[in-house]
Length: 62
Image 1 (tube, rainbow, N blue to C red):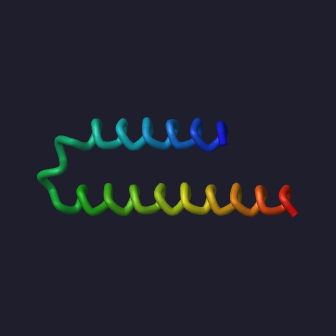
Image 2: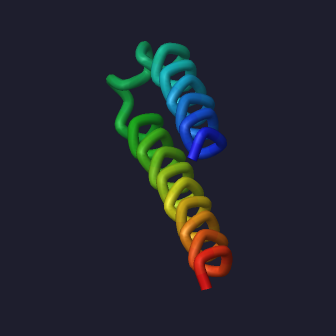
């Protein structure tokens, strides 16, 4: 669980950094959609990471 928390903090910090660097180009829609796409990719990465952790926990229990 500690690993997951550290991983989430890392992802969150990276997201904040991306938003911070790109806040000037939010006016341009293409940049905004690219940023959204990037965020969705990261969210799906986090989801798959948790799925792996869940499967590992199930293996340990059984």
